[in-house]
Image (cartoon, rainbow, N blue to C red; front, top):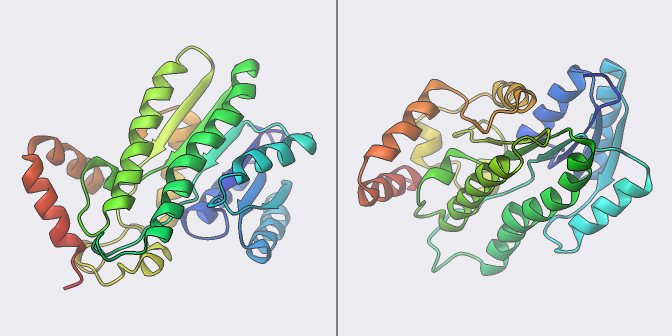
Length: 261
């Protein structure tokens, strides 16, 4: 790929999104970096332009706003950008019992993790189909393979992303456009603290992945057009085991690792 290939990355100011931006830049792709924090985006854009000689454009957007995907698409089109690779990375979680958690926060989560992913994919895939080339990377989680007591809405939102990604990748067969679903496990980012789950057994006892390695794995899988990308042997084994265990046991075990004690 040359620098004329452009990747749009949401949630690019931190965590896996930031590491994905570094991966794409290091392989010569121009970037459109999207998040709410303009200062962080501009700092990242400047660093990546200077280091890799690519062009990085910053667009601020709050994807919790239902109108933001359309506005983002229109802004990109107005600037004359051709998006060859769409990375739907923006997302967040919230820990706690559903009876006690903040419904407004959860509705925002559904908007960001599900609705915005769906809307942006719909908008940007159409030009890709016409050009007969495109890559879409949807960042989900191993959480998408099971129910998640104490993080019920987050797990359910990632289950949507897994199912949605696999379905439309099949629909797009022979179009030159592919959809990859990246499903990392617990990863060392700011995600856990923001979600209030940094003290759970999942993060304290099971070990966490390196975000740079996760992003590198996701980049390679995307460019190869792989449908499902599970970084690490532990996550691959986890996925296979879940398919064999009774669903009630899976749910019970999921609760145990989500507990803050």
